[in-house]
Length: 194
Image 1 (cartoon, rainbow, N blue to C red):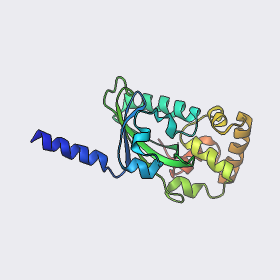
Image 2: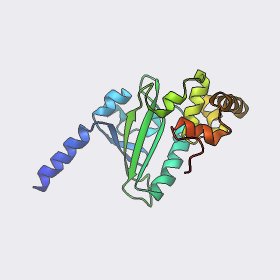
Image 3: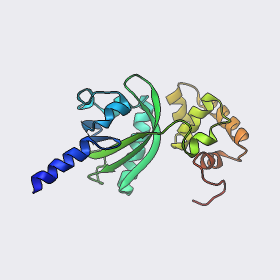
């Protein structure tokens, strides 16, 4: 009986509705079939590689990895939205969710799922409409908790340039500060507690 249950577990993993990865120290051990349609990589090309290949840049890889490690020590499941890179180089906005099998060492062995966020869907996309393309990029990093310096590194510009764009975004969105702007981008009422 245990063997057939194991077969069902394998079947469920392989055919999971979201792109699913099993990682050990941020190296891809196994990938579900959905990974191919979401990221464009053949499973054999990804398995054994660092997950770094799915990030647009080293800064994204490091910052998101550190944040996920801290969060997974504190809670069972970590969820965020972030930029990821497909094999063809296209950068897409994704929802990522991860759980560590060892909360003391969250990167040792973890399961992650990824789902592309459709353009025009969700609270963030609606709030981005009055912004320029560069401001929209910056907004997505802000929502993910990046600092101006981290955004500047990711976009290959100066922190001052990021600050100028941030000030323009605050003005356009009619909010008082960055915290209110992020709250609006996430669809929360401005001034709400939490």
